[in-house]
Length: 180
Image 1 (tube, rainbow, N blue to C red):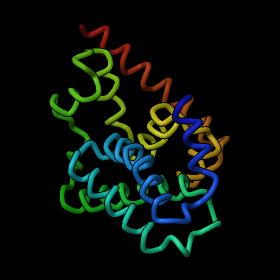
Image 2 (image 1 turned 180 degrees about the horizontal axis):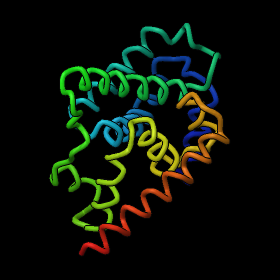
Image 3 (image 1 turned 45 degrees about the vertical axis):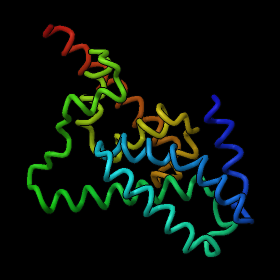
């Protein structure tokens, strides 16, 4: 819920002064990084994506002033940059090995919790847009309306999609538990 309150604060207006911009970036950069990392699963690529997003904001901030809440704009840009990375990787590697995770990647999230590790493995096997939906709604606690706007879909479609994804993830975790 703390994130939801910060979302309301960040969703209101674009920063006007340099001090507000610095404070705004300090608040939003960690959230953007977590979103990019959870989507891409590569620390250095996630950092690059956040830097590119922030650079685009500085360059184009006068263009976007007042058109949409800045938080939505940031998450949308990060989502698009993540999709660009997926496209580049797809061109480089035919089988898209990006989805196989190393155990070291789980250490930051799971704290050696086997069940959570299995869940993140299952999430990693989802399509990029599905993974983004899960991360935005359940990890970043964004309202369906905001997450749908970021992903370019309707809240109703996103709600249905999330229900199907939850069922799929539940089944995959249960299958893993039966194997053990």
